[in-house]
Image (cartoon, rainbow, N blue to C red; front, side, top):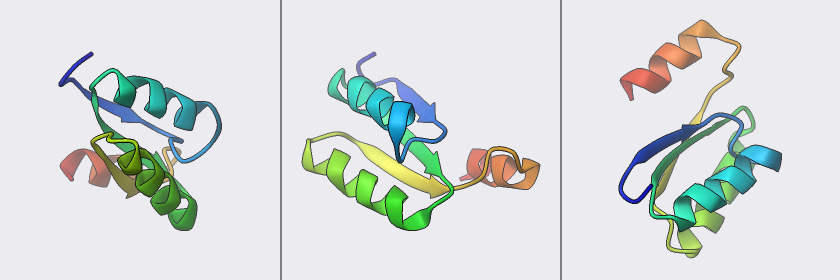
Amino acid sequence: MKDKVVIITGGSSGIGKALAEVFGSAGSKLLITGRNNEELHKTVAELKSKGITVEGFQADVSQQADNRQMAEA
């Protein structure tokens, strides 16, 4: 998975966060989404402190407009 781009919805907590750590540790570049902006920023900072390349995007995947904005970003 080295240098692959992985998008993880719900990446700021739980299973999504755990997956982000696994993929990031394997060398993937990550985009994680989450509804709670504060938790999202905390998770991004935590992953970056582990040397993981990650960006965060506040979004609710149940909202089509949020998904469109995420894809455009």
